[in-house]
Length: 187
Image 1 (cartoon, rainbow, N blue to C red):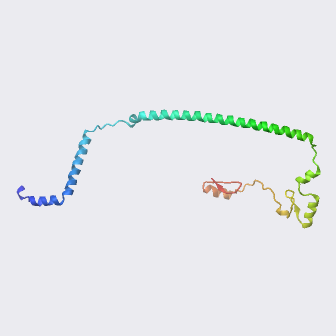
Image 2 (cartoon, rainbow, N blue to C red):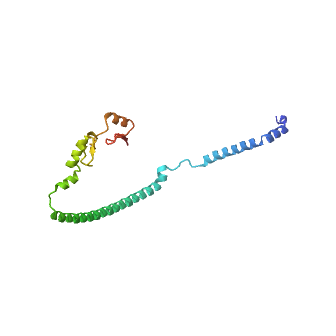
């Protein structure tokens, strides 16, 4: 049986494919070593809870210490802020009391009656100005003292809700709310 084997042919094949055979040999040795290592290893690993228990206890201890420290610092800061505000309030109260005393002294000296001239200063439209505006076909604006066209007098806008149902639905679709002052969709 071995007499028919040509040694020259075998050596040619080995030389031609030597890197492949080397790789296969190393792969076989590696597989054998893994199998041997797995057979000798201890199969019962410790539970994760048992293994990590020391670390968890240490972490929990540090966490409670950190929370206590943060709480105490927060309380200290709050007390300092409250003390600072109280001091500022006292200063402002003292200043306000001094101003009020000065005003009381000044008002006692002056009469409480307002003259027609003072009223005219507040309302910038006097009789002469009103007649002048009427001649032009306009109305006197009491705030500015200028002649304005009747429907162009500046009036303060009421705080109207600019959000109608359609706008609110549109804002709701994009997960936002409608701003009643501007009528725009906000977060």
